[in-house]
Image (cartoon, rainbow over all chains, first blue to last red; front, side, top):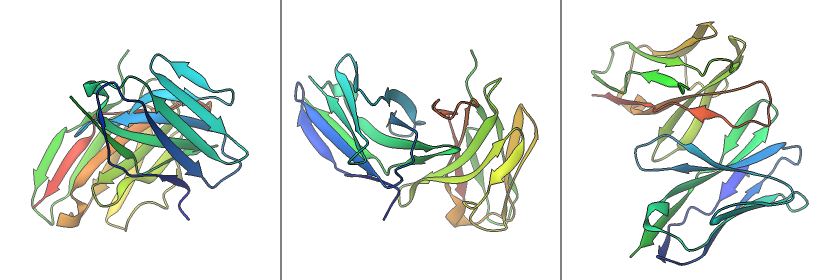
Length: 108
Length: 114
């Protein structure tokens, strides 16, 4: 079993749609969690951290469920510029484990 | 503030040649990571350093790969001899001591071995 698993997609949604990604992790001792965004031929960039109580940043909402060992990302009112690959990242003390990423394409 | 700086941005060379990739982490970050990304295998951690000391190199594919960090502001990843299957994007990332902080990535080096 992979340490961090994501649905690879692709997700193809129209503008304005709401889309959700899930990610599961295997190590219950994992400390911190993040969502990164990667555009084609670019480096991964931090989108947001994920806190136990859940957190929101504009149209983006992240949730963490430690008991079930999964995290989620919700994007509301999706924009064309949201098209990218979204990487789930789990921090285990000394290094991070990246999911394979979920490809999102938002269409007009 | 300057982010993680990698050079070169692109490298094209013939198989058998030595390739050296360079990275300058963000000042004050004492963890440095080298990753490789391909379509087939995604993002793979090759090696990481803490305070200039290699901590885990289990991701280094084979002896042809080596990495050094002679000081807190510079690291190299070397491939000798290079092979076509080494073609990938190589990223360097750094983060502070606090393990709850995220990593910050450089722009990457796009390597093509002919």
